[in-house]
Image 1 (cartoon, helix red, strand yellow):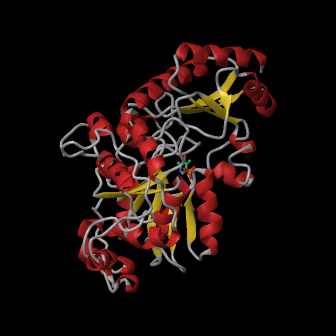
Image 2 (image 1 turned 90 degrees about the vertical axis):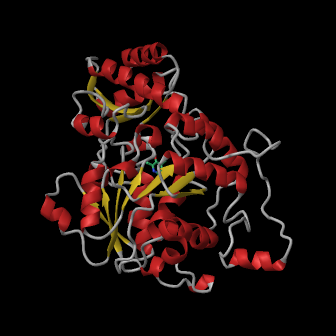
Image 3 (image 1 turned 180 degrees about the horizontal axis):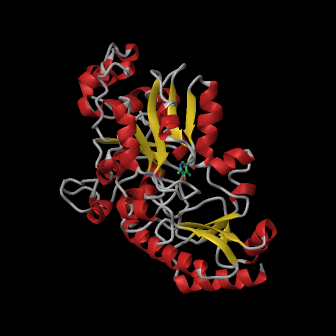
Length: 423
Ligand SMILES: *Cc1c(COP(=O)(O)O)cnc(C)c1O
């Protein structure tokens, strides 16, 4: 405890003992050895700490989980095989058939599919808050079966900034937690838990890994939510699959994250692997430095685009002209990540010509790694969405999403300039 974020990026998590490897070892083992059957029995009954099987935990992964938990001010974290798996487990950990949750409509398209299509099939209903809704209309979304509120700190790709305090208060007024996907902001730019979020989720595939090498996700538990209000029997009543363990009793503040691991990760098996966790840890060691450059480059590019007569609009929360500038100053005082969006005059065709003319910036589906990249969501990542869903997600047909990398910003702008000339 006590170190600054930058130090924790480098140092938190793995703590070698005397004569042990300085660098986090890759424990490439699915299984662990015990001196007695009795000890293994106690592990299975959750009576002692330790590793049992790498579907549930692994020492390399555990070190990275500890680092992420420290960075987000949590009491514990669970790494998953992808961001999708993190969101799935985070929701299903406290919802079941017949229940519902409330969600901001401008979120990642993959998460919308998960919530609106697949969770619906499991009998869990998502209810979207759209920007035009009044307070009364938002209140009307809640009933006795509502179990959480969900939003993204910086929405992908709409780039709306979430008023975390407001939605934490809304959730808490209904006795339910706020779950925040903090993928774009990363713990470097924002700690949602400090503003009242109860659970934080990440796609570590983005800035945390930062080099577009390993898929991964994480769930962080703030330990702050009081589950014993009658709404969450799954955390407060005996779990028959563990001889009647009661998570809130046996694990206290870490009830939610322990259940997610020992019950859901055990049953769903969306586990990360040691090699991937090692690579993620290397990414995390430079996260603070990379975010600084992503943010300053993105602001420079956004300001350049704003004054260009070939651009019809630019969206980046840190622009003084942004509708979310005040929210950005409050929640993202050190920058709004490397992702910007804009529309080119000439619509869809000009957008395609622009993208095809870029030389440095590559057309990829991914965002948030060291290399500058570009994408047209309406024809790619979000093509499953209807026009109405697109609009609700804050995406227009001409929207180009650009993920500004950590190259020299002069080269990035030169590339954009020559491509705009050809558009
Ligand atoms: C990419 C992304 C996800 C999904 O993560 P994967 O690692 O691709 O499964 C979830 N939420 C946000 C905000 C994302 O950007």
